[in-house]
Length: 191
Image 1: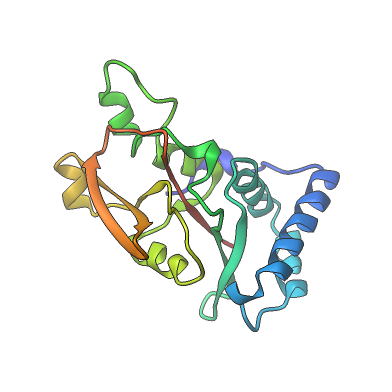
Image 2: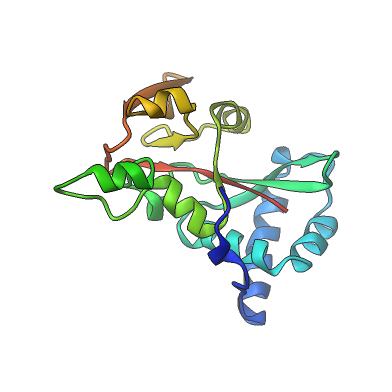
């Protein structure tokens, strides 16, 4: 889901430079996440796309610690996932999507995972992508993250989330309108 509000969002030159320093340091510190990829090529792609750099800044600002986890040879895009140890702090206590948010009459959360992701110009991870992330480290050992949910499940009022416990990745279900202090969402961005 793309959001047109992301268009024309740009960082100042100083903000862009600072973000690139953070991303480069993380890239170099976690080389196991992107073996064989070169930072110079990643940076060139980022510098050519102001909107994508802005989206990465939103991922960083909300605690996602985005990092490169792959390269799509077909599209020529680098793939960034949120790689924070736990579900990003600035994206917790949210229900699944805008419809779920609207359905709550009392005690509404501040936002929804799908709504926030769209405003940031990113997508939620799928269950498969979440499992790929877990191959790179131990994530969400104390928190959980909403993931893209099949339409059939969502149509019936449910949504899926994942976490890692007992050295195993689990997939669960909940009502899409539910929200918890320890549940957020992880995103991805293609650059």
